[in-house]
Length: 325
Image (cartoon, rainbow, N blue to C red; front, side):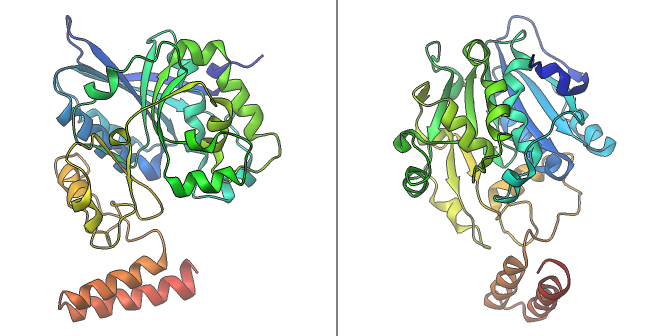
């Protein structure tokens, strides 16, 4: 019999400053050590923009270092709780599914979150670790999902067109799984966690892995929410796309491999929250691929920084021919 608890090595509350007589929002993230820094920035952005609630963060982690755990503890504040759920080696996902997209096993952790938290709360806000909260999550939490398994945000028209050719589902309702408002009771009643594991490990390859699986299982069981709760952008080196987002955006989602915590990307929004976080002194990774280093070198030329441009072009050649390929 399927039991999500079998995937949890340990559970520990590392911060508990919730106050009485204040409503609590339960927010879940799942990540490994490579995403600990951006997850911390995501959490800080939620804390800064949602001051009128208790916020209980449930962090489902895979091999996160003690130094990063110590930094999560530094996020302690009034009305904040943080509980760590460490994933064990029983949590296995078909590796062929993960190879086809920029996906790690930790992205599939969201499958089990509702089962684990069912006894604690009837609704969860799930956030990917490449999101930034720009306004209060109260605006998302207020939606009624009593008759749905989840509140979701539709994906782009281009993605829906691609999905229509791949699966026999209503592509117009295909959603991005980076932000979910989950009804834990309905999720558990319909055994979504078990079905998701069965499907993703069935031998069939799903291009967008856990996201495809959830869309198949939740078809016609979701409430479509406004795009402001999952505004997706793919940033260039100068991150000019950030200046184009609408002022009503609540959650900003950095999709693709172009992540704002890579040194080559000039993200004002991400860096603003990073500078307020316990990770502000961390050395940022250079890039996720060699082409972005080349583009950064070109960007520096336009800024008149020729010596720096030459330095990064040499790094690009090193990455391309010796490291990343």
